[in-house]
Image (cartoon, rainbow, N blue to C red; front, side, top):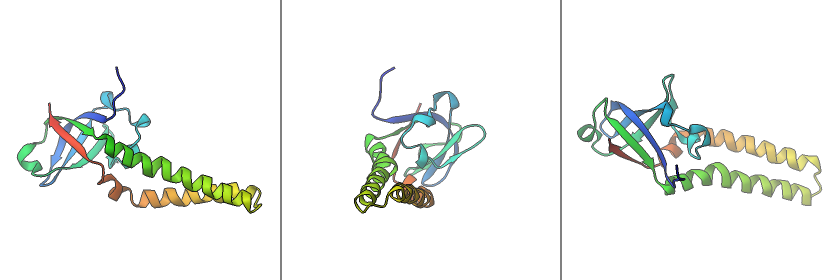
Length: 141
């Protein structure tokens, strides 16, 4: 099994709306723990992860029960990695180094960790808006 640039899931369409579908991702095909965009997935259920995917004319193209493959582009993965890893790292390192240069001592680390908690809360509050920026390509299998 090779490494892919794209995040890909197989699943079954649960619900179809005008401009969206809800897909139940099959557990045997899902490795959400190692996924860079797992924080931006829009929901979970007892049976498995649920993804809400926006797509034009969904009602014309899909019906409940269709088996589909969802593929997120490398651009979406990069977008997610930027907000989930790069921005927090830059903020944390900047605050700790600034605090060290100002001789804050241990308070520079505490300020960095506190800022990360605030950043995580803001990211959590805007998770739906960020998730809507992830673009999925949906193909019927």
